[in-house]
Length: 477
Image: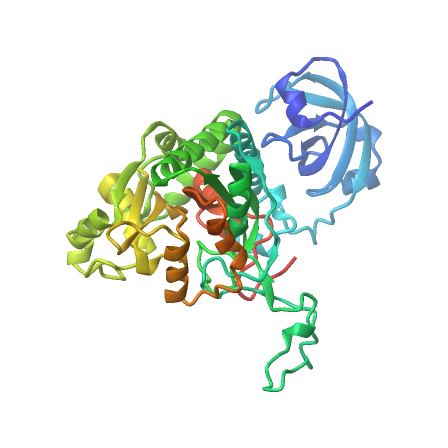
């Protein structure tokens, strides 16, 4: 007999059928009622054992966290709280969990405690729900791009280029850190390293994706990226997943259209396919927010907020318009912003982005046409000579969730911008070749997958939407 998942069993229960299920014990009551969960669904399956037919030794081993395989008959439940239950005929203990040592006992645990138990926290209702939603979102990403004619492109993880020009990268080397080879001037000689040059973990697959978009038309990457940014906040990770589409023959307007449609499409998918988990996460969020000041609570319940994103067009505002709104805003005039807005050219912070979304427009916002000096070298310069065709999508509770632009397709303009920003032309000779041979208007954007998962699940900390978070001073597990 095959093992049936609890989700399958509960979706179409056939009474009096013989079933085999496996899972982990959530609770065991009265030496009779086992609450079993196998991770396939939020719901537990009640399994009823006859304690008179089981030895005392076996009963003692049925503890929270233990792994069991059960065989029995599916029947209508006589008790409250569930429609069906399994009358157990045969029980096998696959793995014990000592009750004094197993840390995930059936009680309320703090998020901080569960982060210390990242290898076991997925067995809780909250993290089981979050990770099932994460999985569904990842599937929705691939489904969306595939059905819209994109090709999935695997960007390299190890790179010699810094796409952002920020320099906050993790170095990759095989040299002996205690005694590396030196040049005549005493510097580390990377010519003797594995790749014969200094290399790093990628911060973005964008530049390589541009190359493939200029041959395949429309491509997307979806993979891990790394930032050696010493930001110990609820919004930053050192290792995270990025979704980066690049499209030949797309201008900024087409890029914004795609980004909006993409986000709405994947959120619709989880609303349709993860209702049970989202309803649980909504209740959890409402309970959590009861202890917060009114000003810090969400304006809408989670499901309503997700439907609001899928059903409303995003508001499109130029950077210049946004700066004027922020300058004239009450928080700015009353010096409530940590970073006051004084003049055009300011780099917007999360507090400004959230004000625009949550207080002023009360809907997702796309900001575009940013000052050239605060944006990357590869963004297309506008005719005014001071702004670039960049766009950011801002979400409630998150701030920036998408960053993108029309790329600079003109060789001489791109070379000039690289010189101004100190980007090495020799290092990116191949990137310049894309402008020498068959250049064309093209665009793309990047979306941090964890920020999307955080928004969809309502989780307050980005460390709780990735299985094993990597943050400053923490690479456990």
